[in-house]
Structure formats: structure tokens, C-alpha cells
Amino acid sequence: MELKQNYLADSHRYDSSETFYRRCGKSGVMLPKISLGFWHNFGGVDPYERSRAITHYAFDHGITHFDLANNYGPPYGSAEETMGRLMDDSFKPYRDELFISSKAGYDMWEGPYGNWGSRKYLFASIEQSLKRMHLDYVDLFYSHRYDPNTPLEETLQALVDIVKQGKALYIGISRWPLEALKFADKYLKERDVPLLIFQDKLNLLNRGPQESGTLDYCHDNGIGFIGFSPLAQGLLTDRYINGIPEDSRMAQGKFLKSDMLTPELIAQLRAWNVEASAQGKTLAEKALSWILEQQGVTSVIVGASSVPQLEKNLKAAE
Image (tube, rainbow, N blue to C red; front, side, top):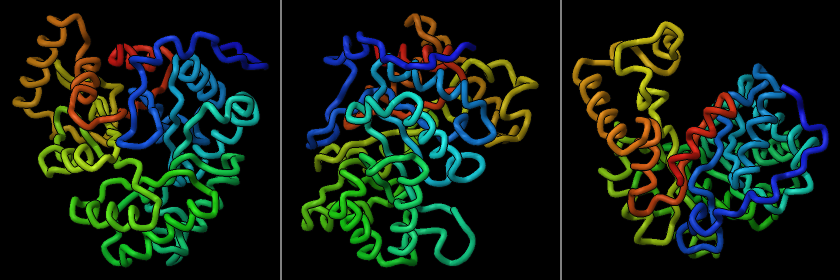
């Protein structure tokens, strides 16, 4: 694929802005319905030219939010390094149009300070992330997971101080239990750094945030919600309605195990596929659309291994 050496963003990228962007909770931030995640396909093992083509296509079609974390890759840190190259090569002139997030909370480096939610880990992580991405600040910095052993006050105060020091503009948390979310919401509001957004897995097969009351709490308290894994690692596509393809993640044992694909699940996938076809959609489009229809959802994070795949996912937002 031939690269654009001097990237010039599409002048029509905001033509659908009235319908494509949603307010994030009660903040001033507008996020695209579809956000681009760097969890897979943007690491050091992936072709940079492909990453560049995907992100160009995303931004050219109004996707302003790129979602990263310190340990995305592989190897760890390399997705953020790809983002740094992209900033240098393509996006530096558009920095103020981009909403870039990163996270810290999972295993990142050896020793007792390279994991979880201590102040030590979070401050080291944000400094490393900024260096890798060639940024002065991130728009959004998350606690990537709940730490049952570090006092919540320590984790939350570190996030407050990261904002006060100008290293992040907003704070988010990912996959915390509801009671911890409530505590965080109160703590952060009292310190004038309100919680912008909550991130969790949400899809047709995993409705945990709805069942726990988390989605309702976010909606009722002015907190945005962003879902990830919308297609359940590919289960919510038409790839598995007739069994396990040889080249699939399930066949390779990556993230999906073959015992998950029960006769009952295949029957459900086929039924949803019929419903989607009747609506003129693919199963994947139906799955994405379902998430965006849920009250309180601001955006959904999609991965993409190619431009055509991202193009298909964007149809769900139309």
C-alpha cells in the first residue's frame, strides 16, 4: 500500500458531526460514537504502514478518539510507540483535534512497582506513556483496573495530582466494581477533578454493566460510558455461525476457547444473524448498533486489522 508521505486530513471529516458525536456525561467533551482502540494490531510486531493507513482512514471519517494503554502491544509499550511515530509522521498538526487516552493498572515492568494502582506506579506510567507517544499530555488517563490492596484514596489522589500537574486533562476508570465507582465519583468531585468516563466490556453476550447497575449509575450521575470488546473477540460476527474457521482466533486458541461455542450459542448467533439480515445489516453491525442504543453509552471502542474492517464497523454509527 502506497503511503501518503505528507498526510492531509480529509476536509469533509466533520460533515456528520451532528449525528456522529455524543456528549460524554455532563462534561464539555464530545466523543465519536466509534472510537479506535490500539489493544491489538498496533504493536511492534505489526506493520507500521498498516497502522498508519488505519488511523488515517479513522481520522478522515471523524474518529477523533484513539484509545491506548501502557501495556498494549506486543511487546508492552509498543502501541504507544506506534502512536508516537504517528504523531511525528501525520497527526502533530491535528493534535488539538484528537482525544488520546492511555491507562495504567496491569503488568508493565518487573518488580513491585510495575503493576496495580499505587501512586508510584501511576506516576511512572504516565511519564513513560507521554515519552513513548511524543505528547506533552494525554486527554484522558485511566486507572485500568481495580486494585483491591492499595487504598482507593491513594489511587484516586494520584489521578487528581496527574491532572493538576497538567499531564492529563481528564480522568477515567476501567472495570471497577460499582461500590468502588461510587466512592471514586464522590472523591473526585470533592477535589474538582470529576470522573469523565467509565470503561467496561459490553456486548450482546456480556451485559455485565447493565446487570450490575453500573451503566445506570453512570447515566444518572453525569459520567460517560465507553464499551470495549463489542464483537466479543469476533464471536458476534458471521465467522462462527457455521462452526470454527481454521484461520480464526478460536482455532488458534487466541482469546477464544473452542468450548465456548456451544450448540446453544451457535443457535443464538444464527438467530441474531437472521434478525440483522432482515434489517439490512451484518451481525457485527447489529452488535455494534445494539451497544450504541443503550441508555448512557457514549462511545464504543473497535479494533481494526485493516481499513475495510474499520469501514464496516463505521456503518453501525450511521
